Length: 488
Image (cartoon, rainbow, N blue to C red):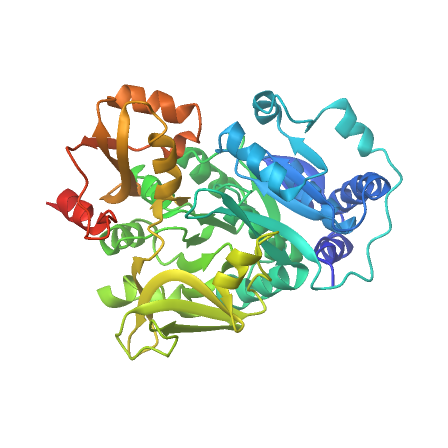
């Protein structure tokens, strides 16, 4: 089993149909995408052994689709990198993954000054496309590594979730079984980053021959997104809750061709969801997942939103096809109905572990179960509700931000004695980062200090200067007390 077979099948069935679009402009048919991917695969095979990591650092661009399938055709491993990261953070991922080749957009390449990169659309890249196409792979082990999905850890260092061809095929089948049923007259509009959720969804839509649509802006602009959904057939998209809110804020009606919005990556508050449903109708599907179980733990189907009460809309639904989900207490025993515990799951979608990190793997995978680090409870109907995040992750605009990572940078400022970072509710972003500071550095100095070291989106929206941080008898900072202070 090799994921390249998804593209191979689409090209065989829909050879001359439009496959990749930028805005409304068709770039390639399915046959052309297959030929381009196999030509790129030939050059990768000539230089690298199977299992070699191939990194892509770019804002949303059409080359990502062909590079993804080219990497799999060469039996190598794709390492997509969040284009919002700071260059130093990208370098850490490149070093950890041991990527042998790095493809980057011109914009990102300009910031990776100490890394050897191949620029997309360069003469070198174009020359690869002239190579004699490789033969499609036929004997790939389904458990072979296909994608290294980097997700920040609570220690501040990114960890690479190892996703196999089997994992991603299980995700693909589950999506088509539970959430959407596209065909060759449908489209996947890439509003969210293709390095993460939107990119993972390339697989099921390619399998069905649905066109891949990349906005001209290479980003999410609400009016542009809605325009594209007027101009392309049968549109679906994965969007973070804050993106959905921005669509509603336009005041525009639902485009006739917008059929499915899968929202996830952060909390969608009930009031916001009701407003979105009132504005756009019954097109919404919710997912709860992690990079370690890509896009696939629980979900609320489209029909589950209809005439639903607040408890249902405030939940994250029930177990997805092919996944066992449970809530366990501190001893690992199943929690009772409505009892809060840690959410765990198992199934073919769950990663094999973290890249070159056996300690983190052992802590996260236990007896076949993925320990999510999220706290929740099941009701009597089998609906799961998230209650808290034991890892203190802040989810802002669909992006995971880990407080310790920000704290460790803040305390390197010479005028900061202590720092603690928590999340605060925000109507637009879901949550925002708030920093409590013991020291004399002002907000402008702290912003400048952070922007030299970490990605802009991780920067606190607010700073509160305090004389001391609340601590327990063991000296541990009481983050709950800080959250309560913010709530007051």
